[in-house]
Length: 149
Image 1 (cartoon, rainbow, N blue to C red):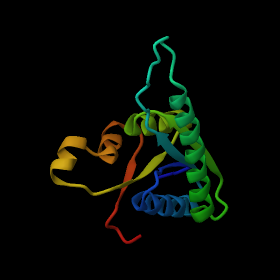
Image 2 (image 1 turned 120 degrees about the vertical axis):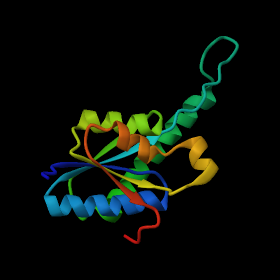
Image 3 (image 1 turned 90 degrees about the vertical axis):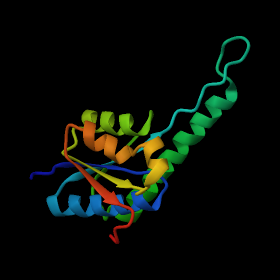
Image 4 (image 1 turned 90 degrees about the horizontal axis):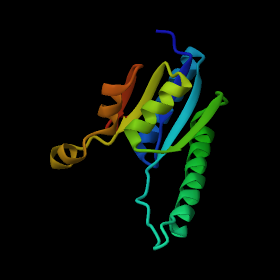
């Protein structure tokens, strides 16, 4: 397997920290570059009577974009050890956004963490990691939250 580009999906969770650590270790071993992707989940738009977006939505988006960039910067500072890192941050649903960014960036591998939820919650909400693994054009490495990485 020849890995040149590794995309690591992160959010603000311990499972994505484990994914980032693993992804950067793989990048170091293969001499690959890394893209960190954080998806900003879309908020329902609130419409004013004059059919324009409410200012609160625009402020929330700006704030989320800033928070996303800060998260990516923190992940890079903590785990990269100098490995070239690209930041990808878009407004989309999690699984679709990760797959789209992977395709556009040309990933050879996606590394993603999973919360490891089971039962009714998993049945109702599904798993972003599973969806990405089913739909991705490249291999997906799923890091379980229980893993002691």
